[in-house]
Image (cartoon, rainbow, N blue to C red; front, top):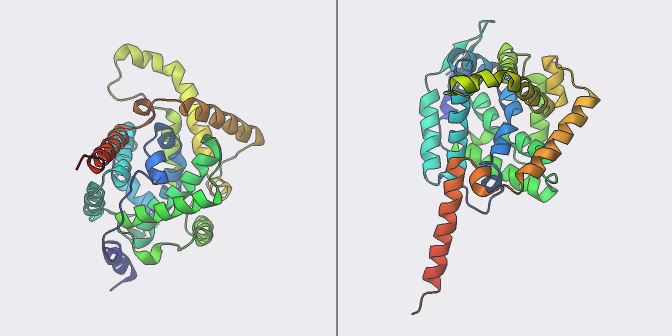
Length: 304
Protein backbone atom coordinates (compact mmCIF):
# COMPACT_ATOMS: atom_id res chain seq x y z
CA UNK A 1 0.00 0.00 0.00
CA UNK A 2 1.48 3.35 -1.03
CA UNK A 3 1.92 6.24 1.40
CA UNK A 4 -0.73 8.24 -0.46
CA UNK A 5 -3.30 5.44 -0.24
CA UNK A 6 -2.43 4.87 3.41
CA UNK A 7 -3.05 8.54 4.12
CA UNK A 8 -6.39 8.36 2.34
CA UNK A 9 -7.47 5.35 4.40
CA UNK A 10 -6.34 6.99 7.64
CA UNK A 11 -8.21 10.19 6.84
CA UNK A 12 -11.45 8.26 6.47
CA UNK A 13 -11.01 6.22 9.65
CA UNK A 14 -13.03 7.49 12.62
CA UNK A 15 -11.24 8.31 15.87
CA UNK A 16 -12.07 6.02 18.79
CA UNK A 17 -15.57 6.91 19.99
CA UNK A 18 -17.75 9.75 18.79
CA UNK A 19 -16.26 13.26 18.97
CA UNK A 20 -17.54 15.68 21.58
CA UNK A 21 -20.04 18.20 20.22
CA UNK A 22 -19.97 21.97 20.71
CA UNK A 23 -22.17 23.43 23.42
CA UNK A 24 -23.16 26.98 24.44
CA UNK A 25 -20.33 27.22 26.97
CA UNK A 26 -17.64 26.94 24.28
CA UNK A 27 -15.63 29.81 22.86
CA UNK A 28 -16.35 28.74 19.28
CA UNK A 29 -20.09 28.87 20.02
CA UNK A 30 -19.65 32.54 20.90
CA UNK A 31 -17.35 33.46 18.01
CA UNK A 32 -17.68 31.25 14.96
CA UNK A 33 -21.16 32.29 13.85
CA UNK A 34 -20.45 36.01 13.84
CA UNK A 35 -20.37 37.77 10.48
CA UNK A 36 -17.30 39.66 11.68
CA UNK A 37 -15.41 36.43 12.27
CA UNK A 38 -16.37 35.13 8.84
CA UNK A 39 -15.21 38.37 7.25
CA UNK A 40 -11.76 38.06 8.81
CA UNK A 41 -10.91 34.46 7.89
CA UNK A 42 -9.91 34.92 4.26
CA UNK A 43 -6.27 34.43 5.16
CA UNK A 44 -7.10 30.93 6.44
CA UNK A 45 -8.31 29.96 2.96
CA UNK A 46 -5.14 31.42 1.44
CA UNK A 47 -3.02 29.35 3.84
CA UNK A 48 -5.04 26.27 2.91
CA UNK A 49 -4.59 26.62 -0.85
CA UNK A 50 -0.85 27.26 -0.40
CA UNK A 51 -0.69 23.55 0.45
CA UNK A 52 0.17 21.86 -2.88
CA UNK A 53 -2.55 19.21 -2.55
CA UNK A 54 -5.29 21.64 -1.56
CA UNK A 55 -4.22 24.21 -4.13
CA UNK A 56 -4.33 21.59 -6.91
CA UNK A 57 -7.69 20.10 -5.87
CA UNK A 58 -9.30 23.52 -5.35
CA UNK A 59 -8.02 24.68 -8.73
CA UNK A 60 -9.46 21.56 -10.38
CA UNK A 61 -12.82 21.32 -8.61
CA UNK A 62 -13.79 24.45 -6.69
CA UNK A 63 -16.23 27.10 -7.93
CA UNK A 64 -14.53 29.98 -6.08
CA UNK A 65 -13.72 31.74 -9.39
CA UNK A 66 -17.14 31.42 -11.03
CA UNK A 67 -19.30 31.59 -7.90
CA UNK A 68 -17.25 33.16 -5.09
CA UNK A 69 -20.24 34.22 -2.99
CA UNK A 70 -21.95 30.86 -3.35
CA UNK A 71 -18.78 29.01 -2.48
CA UNK A 72 -18.26 31.21 0.60
CA UNK A 73 -21.89 30.78 1.67
CA UNK A 74 -21.68 26.98 1.47
CA UNK A 75 -18.38 26.93 3.36
CA UNK A 76 -19.67 29.15 6.18
CA UNK A 77 -22.85 27.07 6.45
CA UNK A 78 -20.77 23.91 6.77
CA UNK A 79 -18.55 25.40 9.48
CA UNK A 80 -21.61 26.63 11.39
CA UNK A 81 -23.05 23.12 11.20
CA UNK A 82 -19.90 21.70 12.84
CA UNK A 83 -20.26 24.18 15.71
CA UNK A 84 -24.01 24.67 16.14
CA UNK A 85 -25.51 21.56 14.55
CA UNK A 86 -25.51 19.17 17.49
CA UNK A 87 -25.69 15.61 16.18
CA UNK A 88 -26.00 17.02 12.65
CA UNK A 89 -22.35 18.08 12.98
CA UNK A 90 -21.32 14.43 12.82
CA UNK A 91 -23.50 13.90 9.74
CA UNK A 92 -21.89 16.95 8.14
CA UNK A 93 -18.42 15.59 8.82
CA UNK A 94 -19.36 12.32 7.13
CA UNK A 95 -20.98 14.20 4.23
CA UNK A 96 -17.82 16.20 3.63
CA UNK A 97 -15.69 13.07 3.52
CA UNK A 98 -18.06 11.47 1.04
CA UNK A 99 -18.01 14.64 -1.07
CA UNK A 100 -14.20 14.69 -1.14
CA UNK A 101 -13.78 10.95 -1.61
CA UNK A 102 -13.24 11.11 -5.37
CA UNK A 103 -11.62 14.55 -5.58
CA UNK A 104 -8.06 14.42 -6.83
CA UNK A 105 -5.85 16.39 -9.17
CA UNK A 106 -2.49 16.32 -10.91
CA UNK A 107 -0.63 19.61 -10.60
CA UNK A 108 1.50 21.33 -13.21
CA UNK A 109 4.60 19.54 -11.88
CA UNK A 110 2.96 16.17 -12.48
CA UNK A 111 2.35 15.43 -8.78
CA UNK A 112 -0.82 13.52 -7.91
CA UNK A 113 -2.91 14.79 -5.00
CA UNK A 114 -6.05 13.64 -3.24
CA UNK A 115 -8.38 15.71 -1.06
CA UNK A 116 -8.56 13.04 1.67
CA UNK A 117 -4.82 12.63 2.14
CA UNK A 118 -4.21 12.97 5.86
CA UNK A 119 -1.90 15.98 5.84
CA UNK A 120 -4.07 18.38 3.80
CA UNK A 121 -7.26 17.04 5.41
CA UNK A 122 -5.80 18.02 8.79
CA UNK A 123 -4.34 21.34 7.63
CA UNK A 124 -7.73 22.80 6.68
CA UNK A 125 -9.38 22.71 10.14
CA UNK A 126 -6.09 23.31 11.95
CA UNK A 127 -5.79 26.71 10.28
CA UNK A 128 -8.87 27.69 12.32
CA UNK A 129 -6.74 28.08 15.45
CA UNK A 130 -4.49 30.66 13.81
CA UNK A 131 -7.59 32.40 12.43
CA UNK A 132 -9.19 32.53 15.88
CA UNK A 133 -6.10 33.91 17.62
CA UNK A 134 -5.65 36.48 14.86
CA UNK A 135 -9.31 37.53 14.91
CA UNK A 136 -9.10 38.26 18.64
CA UNK A 137 -5.81 40.10 18.20
CA UNK A 138 -7.14 42.52 15.58
CA UNK A 139 -10.94 42.61 15.77
CA UNK A 140 -12.02 41.89 19.33
CA UNK A 141 -11.73 44.17 22.38
CA UNK A 142 -8.71 42.25 23.68
CA UNK A 143 -6.51 39.32 22.59
CA UNK A 144 -7.10 35.85 23.96
CA UNK A 145 -5.64 35.19 27.38
CA UNK A 146 -3.37 32.17 27.79
CA UNK A 147 -6.30 30.25 29.29
CA UNK A 148 -8.63 31.24 26.45
CA UNK A 149 -5.99 30.35 23.87
CA UNK A 150 -5.72 26.88 25.38
CA UNK A 151 -9.51 26.57 25.28
CA UNK A 152 -9.57 27.70 21.65
CA UNK A 153 -6.99 25.08 20.74
CA UNK A 154 -8.85 22.28 22.49
CA UNK A 155 -11.96 23.34 20.58
CA UNK A 156 -9.98 23.35 17.33
CA UNK A 157 -9.05 19.73 18.06
CA UNK A 158 -12.72 18.99 18.75
CA UNK A 159 -13.58 20.38 15.31
CA UNK A 160 -10.83 18.27 13.72
CA UNK A 161 -12.27 15.16 15.31
CA UNK A 162 -15.75 15.96 14.01
CA UNK A 163 -14.10 15.92 10.57
CA UNK A 164 -12.37 12.63 11.49
CA UNK A 165 -8.84 13.95 11.14
CA UNK A 166 -6.45 11.14 12.16
CA UNK A 167 -5.23 11.62 15.74
CA UNK A 168 -1.60 11.29 14.64
CA UNK A 169 -1.99 14.51 12.64
CA UNK A 170 -3.09 16.59 15.65
CA UNK A 171 -0.39 18.46 17.62
CA UNK A 172 -1.11 17.68 21.28
CA UNK A 173 -0.39 21.14 22.76
CA UNK A 174 -0.48 24.77 21.68
CA UNK A 175 3.34 24.86 21.72
CA UNK A 176 3.42 21.80 19.45
CA UNK A 177 0.81 23.46 17.24
CA UNK A 178 2.87 26.62 16.65
CA UNK A 179 5.97 24.53 15.89
CA UNK A 180 3.87 22.50 13.42
CA UNK A 181 2.34 25.67 11.94
CA UNK A 182 5.73 27.32 11.37
CA UNK A 183 7.15 24.11 9.90
CA UNK A 184 4.21 23.77 7.50
CA UNK A 185 4.74 27.30 6.21
CA UNK A 186 8.48 26.85 5.84
CA UNK A 187 8.67 23.33 4.44
CA UNK A 188 5.30 22.34 2.94
CA UNK A 189 3.34 25.37 1.77
CA UNK A 190 4.21 26.83 -1.62
CA UNK A 191 3.94 30.04 -3.58
CA UNK A 192 0.95 28.39 -5.21
CA UNK A 193 -0.86 29.94 -8.18
CA UNK A 194 -4.22 29.08 -6.62
CA UNK A 195 -3.36 31.28 -3.63
CA UNK A 196 -2.74 34.21 -5.95
CA UNK A 197 -5.99 33.50 -7.79
CA UNK A 198 -7.88 33.50 -4.46
CA UNK A 199 -6.29 36.83 -3.55
CA UNK A 200 -7.21 38.26 -6.96
CA UNK A 201 -10.81 37.10 -6.61
CA UNK A 202 -11.06 38.68 -3.15
CA UNK A 203 -9.52 41.91 -4.42
CA UNK A 204 -12.03 42.11 -7.27
CA UNK A 205 -14.88 42.43 -4.73
CA UNK A 206 -17.49 40.85 -7.05
CA UNK A 207 -21.10 42.00 -6.59
CA UNK A 208 -23.51 39.85 -4.65
CA UNK A 209 -25.42 37.36 -6.83
CA UNK A 210 -28.94 38.49 -7.68
CA UNK A 211 -28.13 42.16 -7.11
CA UNK A 212 -30.63 44.21 -9.19
CA UNK A 213 -29.30 46.05 -12.23
CA UNK A 214 -29.51 49.58 -10.76
CA UNK A 215 -27.64 48.47 -7.65
CA UNK A 216 -25.04 46.71 -9.78
CA UNK A 217 -24.27 50.08 -11.38
CA UNK A 218 -23.75 51.54 -7.93
CA UNK A 219 -21.41 48.69 -7.04
CA UNK A 220 -18.52 50.06 -9.13
CA UNK A 221 -17.64 52.99 -6.84
CA UNK A 222 -18.13 50.78 -3.77
CA UNK A 223 -15.93 48.02 -5.19
CA UNK A 224 -12.73 50.01 -4.67
CA UNK A 225 -13.41 50.37 -0.96
CA UNK A 226 -14.35 46.69 -0.64
CA UNK A 227 -11.24 45.67 -2.54
CA UNK A 228 -9.02 47.69 -0.21
CA UNK A 229 -10.68 46.25 2.90
CA UNK A 230 -10.35 42.70 1.57
CA UNK A 231 -6.68 43.26 0.84
CA UNK A 232 -5.94 44.69 4.27
CA UNK A 233 -7.75 41.95 6.16
CA UNK A 234 -6.65 39.00 4.04
CA UNK A 235 -3.01 39.93 3.48
CA UNK A 236 -2.56 41.62 6.84
CA UNK A 237 -3.71 38.61 8.85
CA UNK A 238 -1.41 36.19 7.02
CA UNK A 239 1.69 35.15 8.99
CA UNK A 240 4.71 37.19 7.80
CA UNK A 241 6.47 34.01 6.62
CA UNK A 242 3.49 33.14 4.41
CA UNK A 243 3.37 36.68 2.99
CA UNK A 244 7.07 36.43 2.21
CA UNK A 245 6.61 33.08 0.49
CA UNK A 246 3.85 34.58 -1.68
CA UNK A 247 5.97 37.65 -2.47
CA UNK A 248 3.46 40.02 -0.85
CA UNK A 249 4.63 43.30 0.61
CA UNK A 250 3.29 44.68 3.88
CA UNK A 251 4.25 48.07 5.25
CA UNK A 252 4.13 49.58 8.70
CA UNK A 253 1.49 52.02 7.44
CA UNK A 254 -0.69 49.13 6.24
CA UNK A 255 -0.30 47.40 9.61
CA UNK A 256 -1.46 50.54 11.39
CA UNK A 257 -4.37 50.86 8.95
CA UNK A 258 -5.42 47.28 9.64
CA UNK A 259 -5.23 47.81 13.41
CA UNK A 260 -7.38 50.93 13.15
CA UNK A 261 -9.88 49.09 10.95
CA UNK A 262 -9.95 46.20 13.40
CA UNK A 263 -10.65 48.44 16.38
CA UNK A 264 -13.44 50.21 14.52
CA UNK A 265 -15.00 46.94 13.35
CA UNK A 266 -14.81 45.52 16.87
CA UNK A 267 -16.49 48.56 18.39
CA UNK A 268 -19.27 48.52 15.81
CA UNK A 269 -19.77 44.78 16.19
CA UNK A 270 -19.95 44.58 20.00
CA UNK A 271 -23.35 46.27 20.57
CA UNK A 272 -25.11 44.69 17.57
CA UNK A 273 -28.24 42.67 18.38
CA UNK A 274 -27.80 38.94 18.06
CA UNK A 275 -30.03 38.68 14.97
CA UNK A 276 -27.70 41.03 13.07
CA UNK A 277 -24.39 39.90 14.56
CA UNK A 278 -24.80 36.17 13.85
CA UNK A 279 -25.35 34.17 10.67
CA UNK A 280 -28.68 32.31 10.47
CA UNK A 281 -27.66 28.84 11.67
CA UNK A 282 -25.77 30.30 14.62
CA UNK A 283 -28.56 32.72 15.50
CA UNK A 284 -31.26 30.05 15.56
CA UNK A 285 -29.03 27.57 17.42
CA UNK A 286 -28.30 30.12 20.12
CA UNK A 287 -32.01 30.93 20.52
CA UNK A 288 -32.91 27.25 20.65
CA UNK A 289 -30.25 26.56 23.28
CA UNK A 290 -31.60 29.33 25.51
CA UNK A 291 -35.16 28.05 25.07
CA UNK A 292 -34.05 24.52 25.96
CA UNK A 293 -32.31 25.82 29.08
CA UNK A 294 -35.42 27.75 30.08
CA UNK A 295 -37.51 24.59 29.68
CA UNK A 296 -35.00 22.61 31.73
CA UNK A 297 -35.10 25.25 34.48
CA UNK A 298 -38.91 25.28 34.48
CA UNK A 299 -39.05 21.49 34.74
CA UNK A 300 -36.49 21.52 37.55
CA UNK A 301 -38.47 24.12 39.49
CA UNK A 302 -41.93 22.63 38.89
CA UNK A 303 -44.13 22.04 41.94
CA UNK A 304 -43.98 18.46 43.13
